[in-house]
Length: 224
Image (tube, rainbow, N blue to C red; front, side, top):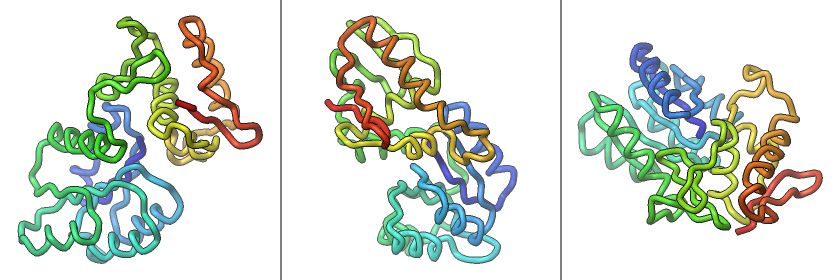
């Protein structure tokens, strides 16, 4: 998933970026309120990790403005502020969680996984999809108990479609979810189509994959 890290402390921002990249998240860093506003206006992130004490403004103001603009990303506030009023203020503005600095990176990851489960109504560790099972935390696809070999990007495409089952996902939505900033990623519009083709070949060797639909001229849908 894509993550916007809003943090002016360079060392912490770098540590967060490295750790989350190792967990297969695509990260973008904003070090000021101005940069955060610009990123949120341009890119639909899945998560925002938001520091409150930014050099040019209050993170709560960034959050309030983003929510007015119908921000859909999950927001976790990461801050050294310990006042109860700040915690309440952030949560009332629409933040999903709050972590006081210093914090454990594995705890942050666990909270991100918990938010994902709540948002998509996942009460079980495995997600069933037409004879297959997705394990999001272990990043594995299973068929009859056996792991199906997928590349990192193939798993990302499939899991995103399954999490948004029965909804048409455009090629742009899939690309932004997987690669984040397209110009920096050297995006090619055929990448998504190639990954879908590979998924159909691998999954089709084991079971019917008619549920992985092409919506001509738009994108793809997992009809489940």
